[in-house]
Length: 445
Image 1: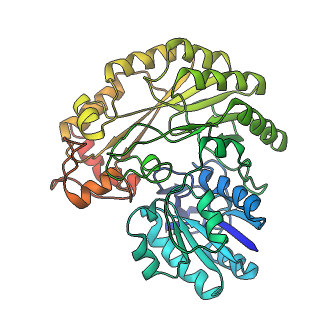
Image 2 (image 1 turned 120 degrees about the horizontal axis):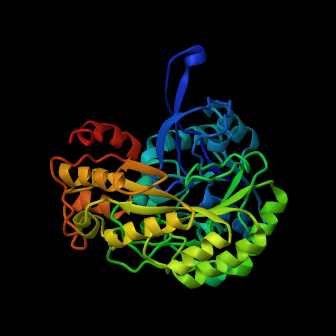
């Protein structure tokens, strides 16, 4: 049995000609909010340096299915290869896989459904399996309208095994337990792409770096956040329990030792939904990284660990952190985003972390449902008041399966009392494109 876990190409647009030709391309699997942007690469001509996330769910599912099903499994990350549609389809046609798994989300679905149709025409016997946030709502319709064998909801290790063992149709959420997660094989890394993944933030990253998880899930319920609502949980309206499962220190040390023995990584980036959920886990990871001996960074919250734990991170080689704020207005944070973050406390943490010698990358979003122009400008002023090394500003994207997407459909969510779909709200699934439309308003004081 031959199985392909596929992150297909996503070329969105191009401009210019000759040496001035530029392409707009998307990132899909591995990105919490798939989006498009102008890149240095061209089809079949890779250039290093653009943001390129490792496809976490796909990497873990590939090795898990290979072990449990005893199948011949390949993961082909066409985004990291920067291959053309033609090169991708030629590969799929030549190999004639028994199963092709594709992870998709709202921003890329218009491209992905065309690719699915092309695969079906070229390889009519291949069974196509769709995973990712796109399956969170109306998967039956997706199966009815497209040549798709199965739709797996949520993370798809167990669902993948069920499908290659004969199941079809809608495969509901079936997450690994924490024990199963820590007994699972390490994720799939391909030599052709292992050194291409890159996230330049927080400042201090060195290439090549490894993007890894030390946990799955997040208990917080930010209205727009995709993975905790659709992949590591099933919570489309913010009313259900969200869980966090953490890898043990033993699992992480064995994984990182194997990974750094295979590839010449110069630093490690923990791209968990929230790395620092509790002092105990963070201190264990600090001990691991002390032994691994590489500089590292992580995706964090401002309010979930003690100051001494931030110090331990620095002492074990952490050079920088990303911290999510979403807005600089407390009402927006509390009543629209529902982030449960005290901005005054977060402000103090930024100063404290900077004093420890770490860099801080702050993340913010604009165009939330019910957010006013003045509240967006307050976020601008909040950013300017703090010593961030770098920031990320995006438009709030609407992705299938999130509370924000449910709000757009139903008009009201009891858990988000300040969120409103009014005439000023722009429903856009690509956050970069939405930010472009908001830019003129954000420049007006």
